Length: 239
Ligand code: SF4
Image (tube, rainbow, N blue to C red; front, side, top):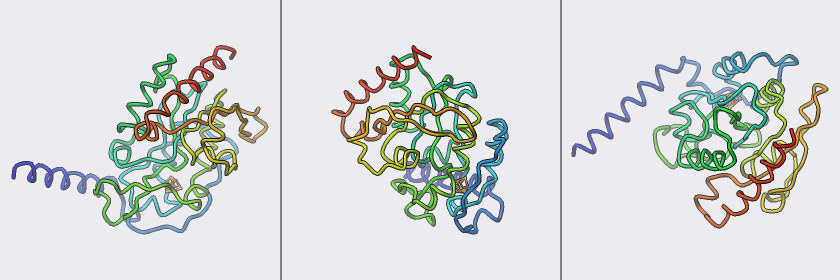
């Protein structure tokens, strides 16, 4: 009984927080329109403030908060995932659940941390299967192509601001979004590619690897990711 009471209190607290972090427009879906990455991107903090105010696609209506990213503005490496989940929506930071803890370990294995890299997602707000029930668990879903198109300007602006030497995409969705390549992740994982950030900036080396969530489901994939991280470490030693 007391566990049920605690659960109800948690739910009530979370709902109050969602309301307090939202203005009334949060509850109205906006049509999906493409965000335009500014020609002069500005600082990461300025970008984060704009992302927090963004309602350019319907995900802005059901989120608790947008999750712009975390890490160093001088990062040589950007890790890019798909989108925030339940935990990230509540805490405002990408990769904070079990997948995030595994990502921390993966980065630590080659001397990186979330303070020295920059971690972001293709979409900045939590895609939910049922936005009418935002506090339910297991409600995560991948972003739609329209949501990714609406949000990609923010990621492009972050990349142009940070100017990383290397981008590591985590899982199939960010690899497809940034490379425009529909080849399955199992075929492109571990193969160096390039990403054109535009704006006259140099091409950026891009390494697709598996999402940490895939490793939690299938630990056999850890060996491939370990190989990719050793390759990343070798590349960083040359920069
Ligand atoms: S997902 Fe991106 S485009 Fe959609 S509301 Fe959030 S920040 Fe804006």
